[in-house]
Image (tube, rainbow, N blue to C red; front, side, top):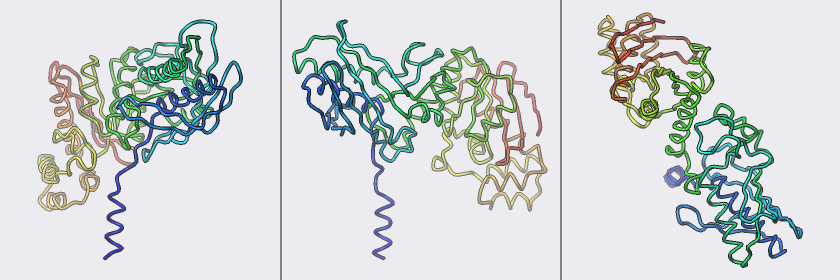
Length: 378
């Protein structure tokens, strides 16, 4: 009994927050500039995060001479499965003959090559809040020592180009490395706000690239299927919305996207069909009564309806109805109408439901301008 209680207590332990690449860059900058001015190595640096919290970062290295200094800290992402967790964030500072603070990105920090991002084309992918944090950290050190000389700061991430391969930076037009990110200074494990921000950014980049048709998928396999459906669309047109169906649809509507294609599997889309627009496994249970009602409309007999009502998963229902394409057509139509309702109309919605192995189960398009269904059965 004691062992069980201890296990439950361990499982309920809160997830540990981490710190953004922006926070790390600001702290490394403060350490480097302090070392340059004081001509002493700095083992740590304390900065104030945008949320008003003071945090001390330990430096992995700090070197200096009379003209320049370099400090580096390792990013701790906490318990969040962040691609940049453990990355070395480096700040190099040097005196400049020009007044003011100049900030740029070095090795492993990407360059922006497409419109639609919060940083202009051609500049280092250091987002606005981290830019502000880095500049403020540097200015605070200059003010502390009463110095008015100009400073040039370069943020680099030695493994940034390799890390970026695990992100969507390439598709967003950020080439050569990672982005220096963060709005609050901390990383909240499995943050929904961070994921939603990435979805909104991807849709914005797609629109700025001229896309009027976007394919929203729930994951990697469904995105791959969507790419097969529309091989002529540019890569920007494909956006992984994850569980945030309603949010992604509203973002598309607000950016005046003309057509949205939803691609996913039975489990999540059985919820969308009912109007559930946040389809995480904990957001809402699968309604097997609803699925049975759809199956009855599709001509399923009584014994099959009972199997559906007592099924364990939506995928199992899909297997039971595999030889009744009308069932998947009806589900796709329900998804389209639920999405149109979420968007407030005025957009063309297509839904494609696929199997785990990537086979098409059903596909329906509804154009809200004339409300005519163009049904393509799989």
